[in-house]
Amino acid sequence: MTGPCLFARPRRNRRGAALTLVFVSVLATGAAAGTWEESGRRPEERRIPERVAAEADSVHRQKRADRHAAGPAAAGAGTAGEVVGRSGDRWSTAFSAREYEEFQQELDGAYVGVGLWLRQAADGRVLVSRVRPGGPAAAAGIRPGDELRTVDGVASRGAQVTDVVARLRGNAGAAAEGSPPGAGSRVELELRRGTRQWAETLHRAHLRDQNVITDHPDGPDGPTRIRVGAFSSGTGEEIRRAVRAASPRGGVLLDLRGNTGGLVREAVTAASAFLDGGLVATYDVHGSQRALYAEDGGNTQIPLAVLVDGGTMSAGELLAGALQDRARAVVVGTPTFGKGSVQLPSRQPDGSVAELTVGRYRTPSGRTVDERGITPDLIAEDDAQDRARTVLSGLGGGA
Image (cartoon, rainbow, N blue to C red; front, side):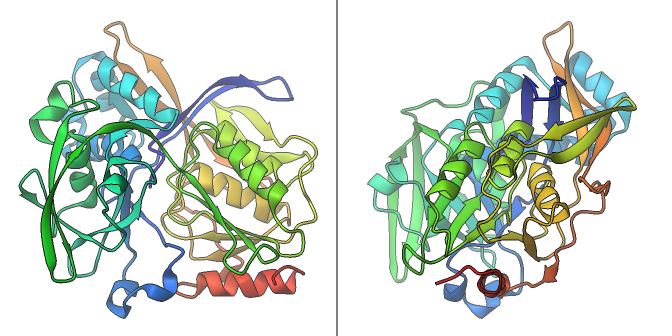
């Protein structure tokens, strides 16, 4: 799932304001997200949001959640931990120097793992939701729908999906306190597919996130579906390429369900795919107002529907809110998470880094997202994708 709690490095927007933003996305259970294969879900799995975790975006989120759950005294060691502990801010976080180095690598979508995305069924089983092509898991023949029974001998059923993912990456338990296993390290899995049960030994590898997935379920002239799991480096340009290649007649379904947020600059680049310049969002830093603007030249004619849910967070909300306020898209789904605060990173003398909330961002119409979220134009749950396709046909899109 997801990009992790992501941080936008300094850049200069077209109005000349240098910005360094952090949009933190914390969910202790992983991000709630839908999948393209909605019609294939069993009824008992539709009643609750699937808890989905991608290897590349769970580790730091779980560390943050653990610290907040433990209270300020456990906010971390060193100067950054003390600063965060005193802040009393639910979104502030302390990183050790090593953790921050790992975090920066994940900003670019890089991680060490086996290439699995997981979800949790209603009965507590942990199932494979997606397999990264070319990764160790794919090479071993693991498929979506397989049950992941154990990781290194530890049972997965009933466990937090983020904990299972941490074990896949080697970041669980004592390993998280030292240097985690690198590429080439072994991980032992037990799996089940129907009546078949088997053990698999995988070797972790250097991988990159696949945060943008595009397909054409109704053929090349039908809607182009673009699912965005997180806004890591390069995501905005991937979205722009997908929009340029989309059929003007078919329109675009932009699926931000379960989007864990990400780099602000990438969300703005994504907005630029659909807007011809203009305001994307405003934000304040210690009371000083700033603004984010789309680039000129986006496709303002192609029909667009945006899918959101309670797992749509942070930069995902920024994008959905901008397209909604600018009357560029019809937003379909359920209300979003409501994370619209801005953090600035501050490196401490001991090398640790504290991220502290300095302000809130607002949509172009001035709506505050924090603790409120984005309310869709059309409320829909299990049938959200079908409803969105109906909306597209009314906008002139669809096969």
